[in-house]
Length: 155
Image (cartoon, rainbow, N blue to C red):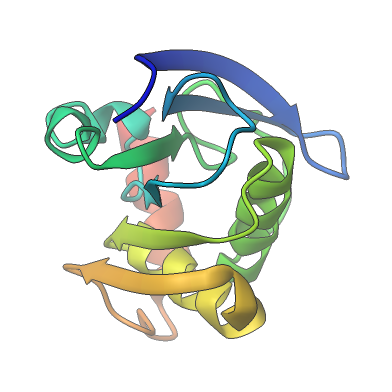
């Protein structure tokens, strides 16, 4: 690896104004020739990017890693609206633009895996690979009601 590894935290504003909190673990200086893999990690429902804290050090010797809080989670905005995997995928696409990544390997756990699948479906040219961890493509017709209950109990 050339340069040193830096972790920079920031906020990206989605087109609707929702702030999306993220941390980029990347070799410096940024903007140089791409010689490392790029991995975006998407967390589970009711968690945040810190769920990846133990994983990031294992990946960064070989790859730049982006972790972020999906809207409604962690330090990201919590607008009152319907959240969908496609909305989260659009947030990820905007965030990749913000950090100047054309594409990435996208890995997601549980809800994050649904987001990764949606991202891959909408942006196949930006998806180098998918890693789907403990996830499903559909949670069933009662999921929104159950998730609202879970969210209420967690917060």
